Image (cartoon, rainbow, N blue to C red; front, side):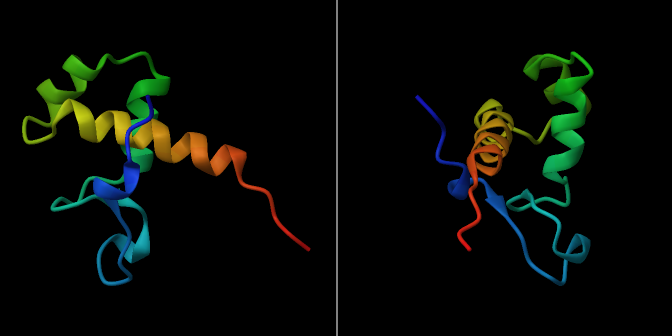
Amino acid sequence: MPVQWREHIISTPDILRGKPRIKGTRIPVSLLLGYLAAGYTTGQIIEEFPDLKEMQIHACLDYARELAEFKEVA
């Protein structure tokens, strides 16, 4: 079951120039996706960023999934 990424990810123009990030942090979604792409486990990522929760990392994957499914309507 997909995580509801909107509960964990936010984008505001005044922080990280509007890049999507984990709510309550300055950790960009792209950084976490990069860790996952490099083969890091959620446990290893949490070791690097102890304030993160596993659900937040899963939210990044759900966010990426939704972006990949996006269809532009002309």
